[in-house]
Image 1 (cartoon, rainbow, N blue to C red):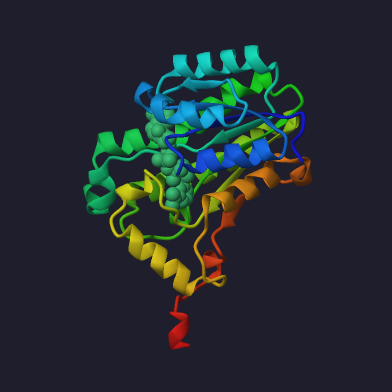
Image 2 (image 1 turned 180 degrees about the vertical axis):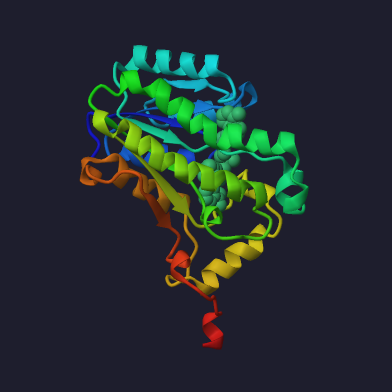
Length: 260
Ligand code: NAD
């Protein structure tokens, strides 16, 4: 489905990262992939993974640095000549800001969460544009906590709401260049970042119990949905937030199936 397309996937930290599952799924469908990671310490974990994908492009890019974003795109462009698929799988919030009271969110923590989790999508999309010569597909990762309140999601819920609004504004802005911008919104998946949220295992149990499909989502499920959005099958889909959550978001009230 993706033969002949070049993909840049950001946000890989380890083998549990959603970014890694997306990289594998896009590669399986024929895309040539390059990866980026946040800091040098991650190279030790990322490089062995990259080697399994016939991929020779894995570069550090801290998205709080405009210079590193520019360098990433220049180097990707020099290596691949064109960019067709950009995946933004990056988020950050101070631990105190997600697990404390929302009203206690600090000014600096709020700014950092918005910068890393939201502004970086805009900055990456801007830097990617010159290389998206045949149009392209930009995919980011959101969470239902953008739309409804979830315990201990706090500032990240506000950041995801801004991310989803940014998807719509970017889609409108870049549409004339045939660049599509969408978000995938998976249910909870145990990853490095997810570990920062208190009560995460209870969330997993709850989703498995009450969601229409009565199961949790895997990284591979998200990878498959990313293949669709990246492919020409989704040629007229842009500005969308696609829930990949076993149907959890359709529920108005959650009841354990055994009490029905
Ligand atoms: P993860 O920890 O594997 O990935 C998060 C990535 O963000 C890491 O690779 C981290 O290095 C990167 N990052 C943080 N600060 C950065 C910076 N300054 N520059 C560059 N990269 C930076 O966890 P994940 O769960 O795979 O998260 C990927 C995306 O999926 C995030 O946007 C997350 O909010 C979203 N998401 C996750 C879940 C879940 O339950 N795991 C659910 C819905 C959405």
